[in-house]
Length: 253
Image (cartoon, rainbow, N blue to C red):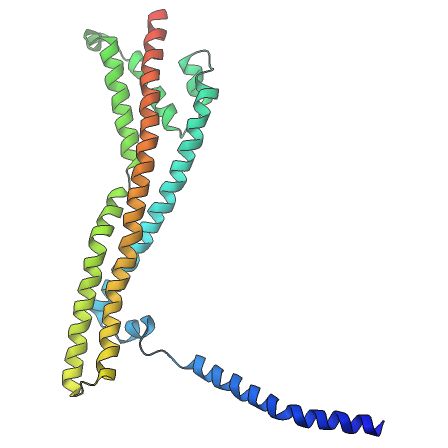
């Protein structure tokens, strides 16, 4: 029993230096983590003036708006894609155009286009009868397609504006930050590398932020524009088929 106690005690004495070294290392690592970074974005915000903070705020709003538009338009395009797949089963298998319209969802652009065509045939009276039914329905459906196109393109102008202007907004923040950094260095009378690198590096962050805002907006604009074109082609093809169906239905009546 006593020999076991002595062996345990001797083992504890041998492990004690290693435990102390590990504790010292963890303490030093924790102290290193707790040290504030004097050259980060947080330092840029805390040490910047009203102009720099305004530029950062504008870039933040541009980024939030861009991502909101990108996500919302992707959701909208996915919904239109599901509605497009419903058209062959729900609309073209109906007994009439009116029944097909009722089978489609209320927020479907295909239902909107079909209702536009139906309204055009119903309003082909009085002075409008002097215009041929074919031309009248064609113009009405084309106007409906234009409205769908306008809805699909909502928000893309903002993405285009952000992609073209955000780098220059960030560049303005960089120029402004470098100007103030050089002014402060000149007043301090110290031009060593450690005095110059920090403020100038923080100012250059503004250009990087501007590019980080512009690149997703540009890629999102191009991607959404291609998807919109594909969706609009399907809507136009549906409009052409709808035009023929309306003429046949009107002739039958």
